[in-house]
Amino acid sequence: MATESATLGTCPNCGETIPGGYLLIEYDTTDGPSQFAECPDCRDIVHPRP
Ligand SMILES: [Zn+2]
View 1 (cartoon, rainbow, N blue to C red):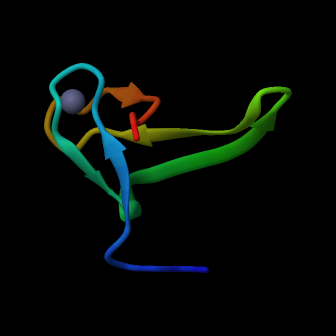
View 2 (cartoon, rainbow, N blue to C red; view 1 turned 120 degrees about the vertical axis):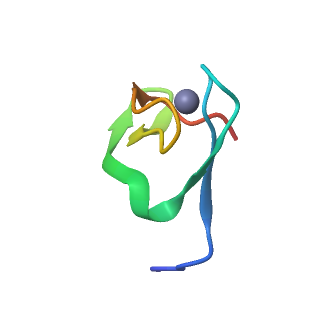
């Protein structure tokens, strides 16, 4: 399941692509799985956009 080259999506703040290694936590919501990741560019904690 660990795919090094996978990206989480893009930062909703600055649009930077967020690599898989920047994933902080993944959790399930009633709407499905959700993720928090640190943006490598603006250093914010964001929900990556697919
Ligand atoms: Zn960003």
